[in-house]
Image 1 (cartoon, one colour):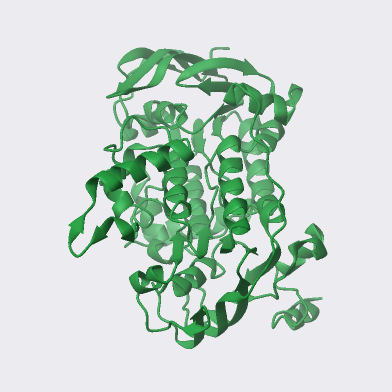
Image 2 (cartoon, helix red, strand yellow; image 1 turned 60 degrees about the horizontal axis):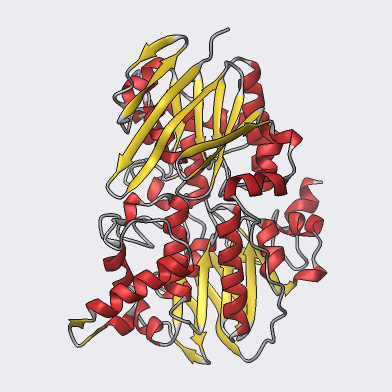
Length: 506
């Protein structure tokens, strides 16, 4: 049987970097092939070549045994190739159904598309409202839209670029059931993930890339996670620091904070949280339960409708994000392109967006900005040929390292971080987590929203859960078992307004 897809000697270079260097690989019908590599190893570029959005400089592609020239995504779709992108290709001003319809080769009535979205969401455990506007969706919900849009095309080859990065463990398990079923029906799957346990659980084979070249192809079930990590990095991965915090005075307080929601957006209801100097408070919850809106309220990007936000004991409801930054508050948002950075701007210019000490009275300290940008790149191992490289030219993980590093290296007194290690390889994730732990040891108050439950248990002093815009108590992490946390993520903590609903359902 000929391979579904065969790549021969694929090479792609950009100014200052060779993204793919003489790559050859194949994937058979019904096979799940994982692609593993550090941020910037060339994985996403290779997938874009297969999907027709990037043209290789050299090399050839065969699909179902015949040579093909995939010169556009539409040509890829005609062959039966679908892709779930790491950076979502969605129109924010359109509804979910409208976005899905745009990705289909055939024209269907919108109502039929909506019904099919609901059916696929229910069948595969990735529900999303077809009538919701994408702008109102959290990143995890947007990822569900991308996955459903790909499944709508009944693909022969399905490419998934970090598909589980903002899905809950339960949703990941359902997705893997879906992918195994698709593979059993003959669909070939190319799967990019930094989560080594997922690769071992799902993939038949794993091709490891390093610096744009194929290092080795292995059967992941025959390797430990440590062995896979060493193959990916080329050395021993860094270790997570374990330092206990010494909580001081409360420096960020939310006192009965409320914000109206809507049909597609979760509001906030009577949020009460006190974060102390020298501690990390982790916030868990399924995407779309108000976490990102909560951080927007903390930062001043969303207005407080009820209650009070305090910084160092002073109400800041009326302060702008810039005024809150001046008081020591920094923010790493969930959406790195467009919110955490301006895609078209260089890294140097993006540094200036939040580094207040580099521009005063209308003058910009260009030399200082360059030095600081170079420090970010060096300290967080951001793979880029130049500080002048546009943010959108970086891989997702490298851009994440840059944005996190930009905020941490300004030594904030309060840092709020939304999904700190989304799409980041295992080594870089440890670097980011260690930087957060070190910042805490310096006395900073840190709030981390993450759907990586293991991450929250590793770095948090206390942990809380959000469900439908409500927040559980923040309790010491060692007092909350993983099983109990799962119940809390369904709204079933003591005192929850949803506990009576569970009793009625029983």
